[in-house]
Length: 212
Image (cartoon, rainbow, N blue to C red; front, side, top):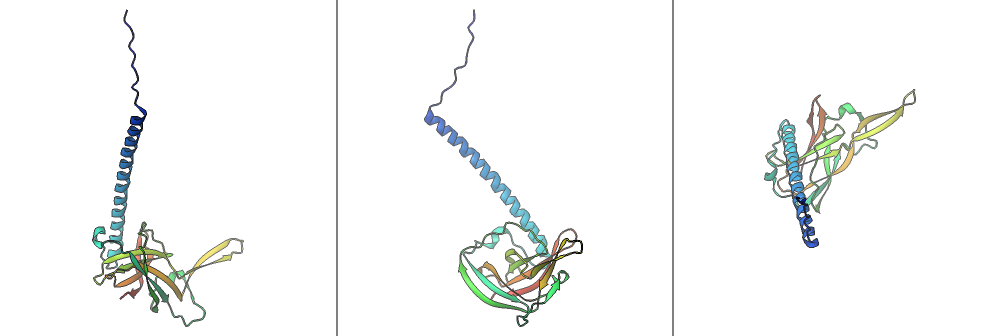
């Protein structure tokens, strides 16, 4: 008569068991970091291609990501005035005038501060924003940012049916601040209004502010 065989479970000592699970978690963590790093590279490359396509239409060259050097550990903050400040009551203009060139521009204040600015993570444009491009003397991009359009004001009115209707206007006079890296290569800040062309955004130059 044959005896049935049984498998005896292997017992791992407590210390070795803990090392085993730590090693397993370490391998999983390394795999996760590798995948996330690859996704980050892909996002950066996609954003880089979008930047090149967007800025090539306005004559700005976008260099490769690694050719712009290390991130500056100081930044400048300009206080800028758009429009004629002598007017006591700012003029309200319709949204159709958002892309008009701004002729009266002045720098009210210029301060240097320590610290690094956060990196731009998203290239999400809208007509209610302004695209800021910091370029060098050769029209090469050194830095960029997207900020809310400081000229935008919104009003709400009630229709005869009782519904609230929102409408955007643009003020003729506005003072705002913009921060950018303290990079000696930056020669000017260019401010663009995003314009929807039916399939994508184009940039329309509002004004340019020298930084030297």
